[in-house]
Length: 125
Image (cartoon, rainbow, N blue to C red; front, side, top):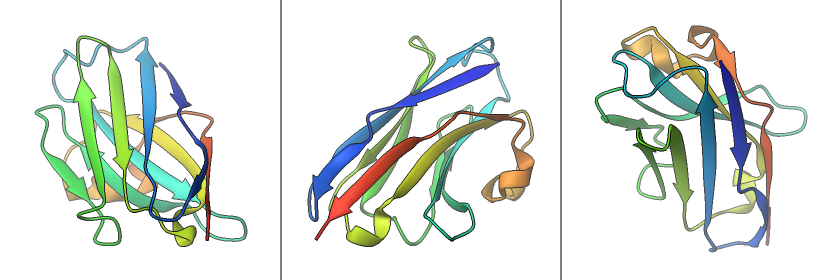
C-alpha cells in the first residue's frame, strides 16, 4: 500500500488549503480501511489531526474542529483534508495514514500501518 500526499504550500493566516492523499494498493471501496491525518512541526511530536472511517464518519481533533474537514472519494481512492482559517501554529508537515484497525485508537499514530511521506504546510502571519 502506498500513500502520496499533495497540496501543501505557503499560505497567509486566515487562508485555506486542500490536501489530497492518493492511495494505491488498497481499494477504499473495501470495508474497514480507515484513514487518518497527522502533522508534525519541527521539534514536536507527531500529532493527530483527524480521521475518517471507511463508512465516512469523521473525527477531527478539537484543535481543528470547525476549521478542518476530512473527506474521502472512494472512486478516486483519495482522501482529502480541507483546511480553512489557517493559523501560523498549523504549520507542519502533514501526513496521511491508513489502517485496518477500528475504534478510538485511531487517534494514535501507532494504530496506522501505512504512511505517506508528508507534505509541508506553512502559514505566515
